Each structure stands twice: as C-alpha cells, then as structure tokens.
Image (tube, rainbow, N blue to C red):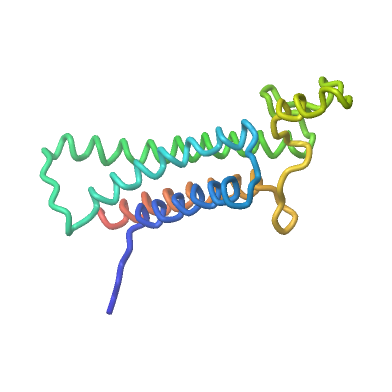
Length: 173
C-alpha cells in the first residue's frame, strides 16, 4: 500500500504536536509559561489553520468547487500566511532565546521579577502570588530551552514550505 501525505498535512500534524506539547508542559507537568512563551504560540494557531486550508485545497478526495480566481487567491494566501507566521514565530523565538541567555534585555514582562519585591515574613504569601514566571531559569531539555527548540521548529516549517513551493513549481512546469 502506497500512502502519500502532503507537506501541508505534515505541517498541520507537526504544529499541532508542538502546541499539544506546550499545553502538556503547562497543565500536566505544571510549568507556568512566561509572557513570551504564550506569545510564541500564536503563530502556530495561524499555521495550523492555514495548513488545514491548504491541505483541503490540495486534496483530491475533498471536492472543493471554487472559481479558479478565488481558488488561486486562497491557495497563495495560505502559503503566504504560513510563511509569515513561521517567520514571525522564528523572530519571537529568537528574541526569547536571546533574553533567556542574556544576549539582550527584555522589553516585555519576562524578566527577573524578584528584584522589585521586598520579601518578609508578613507579606511572603501575598507577594509570592504576584511573581510571574521569568526567563532567568528556563526549562531545558538536553541543554536547550523550549525557545531554542521553537527557533528550530519554525526553521523546519519554513523549510517544508520552501520545499513544497519548489516541488509545486517543478510539477507545474
């Protein structure tokens, strides 16, 4: 049996696994994400939706009857949306990775928040609830933080899109 899966379908599955792993780390393992971690999830939502659209348009089993002009616009728009979202995700992840490794200061709320709080016995429990997660000690797997993996992940998605676009041009000529 010969099963073929399209590149957009691979991107849907991969991006869904990335988001699912982020939720698993947050809700099952109990690691609260910082502000930048949450922001890095948004491009994946757009990538998933655009890849589903692209998969449906490329599918030979799903009958989609659109005028050719609209079909081409949606088809191209889905590729553009995935590319822009992956580039945006790459930039956010690179920025977050730099903050974690003290390459530059953060402009957002992901910094060492213990510096502004005076901890003492009377207000310890109240102030501990005000401390948000920070980037000074990120969760790491095999020596690389999640933002580092996110940089690689977005490069991987961009590589898949470039490969698919080149493959489509080769097949159309």
